Image (spheres, rainbow, N blue to C red):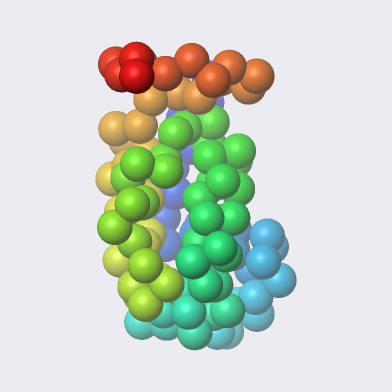
Length: 99
């Protein structure tokens, strides 16, 4: 499986494409809220990124809020992608916790 490296630039391109946000609005200091992403939009972003990367990211984004700047979200995403386990299509198998 190919390793997909996300940078701030690729997150900008992803947001522009997936959420129809003009690239000139996607500045590093722009918050998700300023870009039109509320808490539901943030969840949609996380799910879209999981689908794009094949990685489980939700747990890593628990502390992210719509008031966080794009640069912080990009840094967290890069870090999360390096440590996140693969999520195989059609599989909801989780490791570790059996409730």
